[in-house]
Each structure stands twice: as structure tokens, then as C-alpha cells.
Image 1 (cartoon, rainbow, N blue to C red):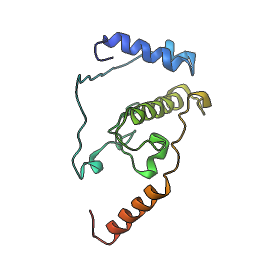
Image 2 (tube, rainbow, N blue to C red):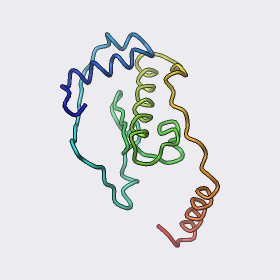
Image 3 (cartoon, helix red, strand yellow):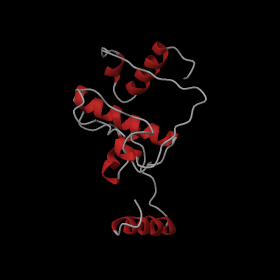
Image 4 (cartoon, rainbow, N blue to C red):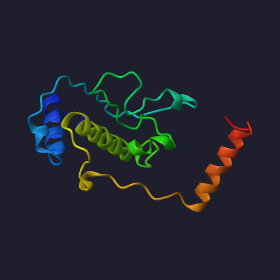
Length: 146
């Protein structure tokens, strides 16, 4: 997609969304903003999580949705990241699907999107990972770790 023309990306997105609802093929598009970064890597610094946007940022105009690996990923936002909370292509995919689902609900009046286009939630953490996460959570509560 890095080398694709904007119109080609929009067309591919429409065809993909039309798999869930054919109205996507003919809906008018008001604005498209695409950013490409060839051979780039996402880098985050400690403490930056609180500055990441929600899928629907507070105060955002109707129809503005954020998707990608920078979308807020707290446990409360499970409906957006479906458990894919790290930086990954998978998180970019599931947050994009969640944003598309919200668009379908807000603008097409769909109550539910077909289960065939819903990503599966990731498996629960293995026991040693759960223990490590709980240890860090408790250390933060006690002020040992930020």
C-alpha cells in the first residue's frame, strides 16, 4: 500500500467494507487523509500511553475515528483492541475493523456487524504472564514502579 495511489487505497477499502454491507460501494466520501511511512518504525517513550488517542477521541467531530497501533489500549478499551494491546499489525487490523464497525453503526444504522468480519479475541494470558502482570500492578499500587 505504500506505493499505491490514494484512490486505489480508498477503492480497496470500499470493496472490503462492502463485504459486510454493499452500501459502502456508493456512500459519498467527504474527506480522506492517508499517511505512508516507508521503512519506518513506530517508537514510543515511557509515559506516552496517556497521550495516545481513543478510537473516538474526546471532543472529536462526528465521524472521526482513529485506528492503528497507536490507539489507546487499556483493558477498558477491549471492544477496540480485542486483546491485541501491543504494537503490531494485528492491533492495527483489529482497531481498523472496530472503527469500521462503529462507522457502520453510526452512519449505516447497522446494529451488529456480521460475525464473519469480527476478529477473534486473543487467548487469555498464560499463567506466568498473568503473574508477572499482577506483580507489576501491585508494585505500581505500592509506588515501587511508575
